[in-house]
Length: 181
Image (cartoon, rainbow, N blue to C red; front, side):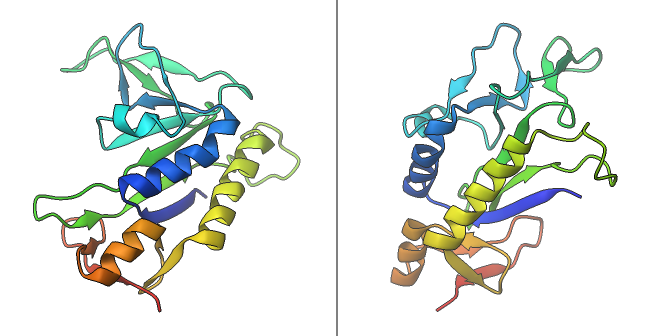
């Protein structure tokens, strides 16, 4: 089963999250990687460099990132990360839509590959610890949504309370979300 966190964050919230993650030495890869690509180091300055809505955050110091080339189609020759054997989180950014509403993002990883607790082929324990660290950061300093299911960054919550921001669930018919209390 995949571990997932859904959230709303403005660029200042994203910058604060990346500042927190900087000591973990993560790198960011796009979903389609051009050959010879040099990954972006995840720190507070990386937010300006992220030009796509979805990225992979890799913890390369615990295991190598496994990639394979796309062999057919319009993206032929590009590289794709294999999510299961690689130490990566799929990171969807919380971005604004055409109406100016902030659409939810998510952090996703397949942390338990098998149901057998004695099987050591799963993700490294450092990946699970990092996911729990991010979840703890959200529980400690972020706000809950109403209806529940999302975490709202401090800057996004302040903008929502002022009435400057509408929070919308991702998807074709995503509903609007508020901030609890």
